[in-house]
Structures are given as C-alpha cells and as structure tokens.
Length: 313
Image 1 (tube, rainbow, N blue to C red):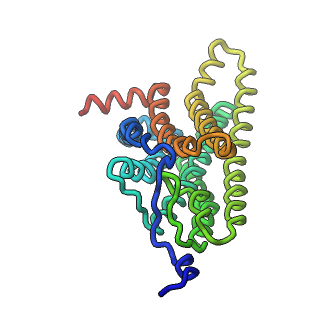
Image 2 (tube, rainbow, N blue to C red; image 1 turned 90 degrees about the vertical axis):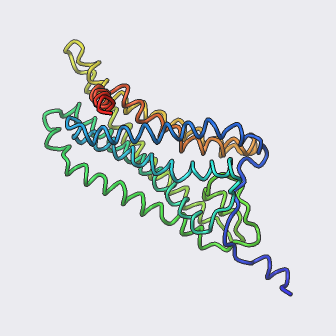
Image 3 (cartoon, rainbow, N blue to C red; image 1 turned 45 degrees about the vertical axis):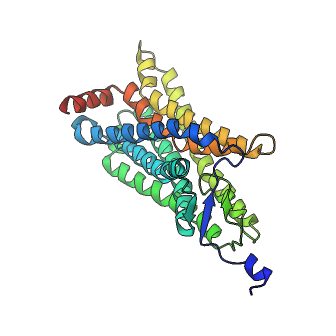
C-alpha cells in the first residue's frame, strides 16, 4: 500500500476548473450573455477582417494593424470563452495538464501583444499627424511586417517563462483550480513548491511590457495633442483628433478594464473572490467585441466597406 507521503506527491495529470466557487448558480445566468457576446465578438472581428481583405481602399498600413488586433482578439476569445461555456453548459470542468499551460501562455502573450499593437498604432497616428509629409515613407507595408514580427517575438519570448515555470512545479494531490481559466496565480498556488520566483517573474515581466507600452502611448498622444493645438486652420483640429479618436477610445477602455482587474485582484480580501474571476472572463470578451464595432462606427472608410460587403451578400 502506498504511504500517505507518496500519495500526497502523486503527479497531477489534469486540473478541475471550478468557476465561481461561492456562487455557482451564477453560471446559468451568465451563460446566455457570455455566449451572445462571444458570437458578437467573433462575428464583428470576422466581418472587419473580410472587409479589409476585400476592400482595396483599406489596403493601407493603419488597417493592416487593425487586422492584426482583430486576429489577436479572435485567438484570445477562442482560447478562453469556449471552455468557460463548456463548463457552464455541460459541466466539463477537467482540463489536461498541457492544455492548461497552453491556455496560460496564450492568455499572457496575446494580452501583451494587444498592448504592443496599441502602442504601434499610437506611433502610426503620431507620424500621421506630426509628420504627415513623411508618413508614406515611414509607415509602409514593410514597417507593418516588421512591427508584427516584433509584436509576436517580444511578447512570446517574455511570456513563455510564465507557463514553463508553472509547469515545472510539483503538483501534489490538489488539482482543483478555483477559476474558470488557467491563470498563473490560480494554478501555481496548488503546487507543493515555493512559487515566489514564479510570481515575481510574472509581475516584473507583465508590468515591464505593459508599462513600457503605456509610456510610449502616452508620449505619442502628448506629441499629437501638442501638434494639434498648434494648428490654426478652422476645423483642422477636430479633423486631426477624429483620425485617432477610435484608437484612443479603445486604448482607454483596454487600460481601464485591465486596471479594474488588477485592483480587484489586489483587494481580494475585501471583495468576494468570484468578482475577479468574472472580470477576468469579461476582459477576454468585451474588448474583442467592442474593438471592431468602435472602428466600424467611427471610421468612414470601414463603414463604407462593410456596407459594400453587405450589399454583395
């Protein structure tokens, strides 16, 4: 017979995801709005990608960057929401060891990829407004390709150690994750080992990547605002600001949701633990649903392209 100590260190081959451990009745009420938001996000981003692909007037660097953002949103949604809905509808709580850490990698890397894409888009608007004559020679198709490679490489390299460090920990008999998704903090605390370095790396890497992007975005918009205020021509200021209005709205929303998520995680002892879980799910769903809608409504060229696409159907 195996001794208790041998049992306690038995390797874990899968995890069980327990959504909203204190309020599991929420699942039935949340499944419908979450599924509708998921369909909206998938449909809106797919429509935006098809429109940019088919409409020749949208074959420009700014819209290529928007396509990249839509692709990132689609992957993030597909990584998180189908599993959450499977738990809600069919009680499929189990997730394999490898699938859990793959989900962790995609969530960490693609979140910072989105932030980095916003930073590149802010630079695009900075060049367009502050150096309009040089814009065609600076923001080229080759620039977009190099930017995309940088976005994927930087964030993949710095995010990869998070799931690698977590997967190398020893997991004992406990395999119940009190979350709907495999976040690093939710998974690693099940380990028998010391997780100080694991958490420290995620904190430093995450805030270095997101913080540097935010600083560059703020600098870009500071220069944009300074340049716009110097414009004397009537109506030119409003026109210049409208060119980056949609981008600014999305950055503000992305940053606000992320900030609320961070604050609720820091204040876990003062709020129900299910609230950060819900906010984490919504952060992977609401921005992907809103991004294409905001651009579609506020950008004349995209709006016209979508109308042409609908007339073809």
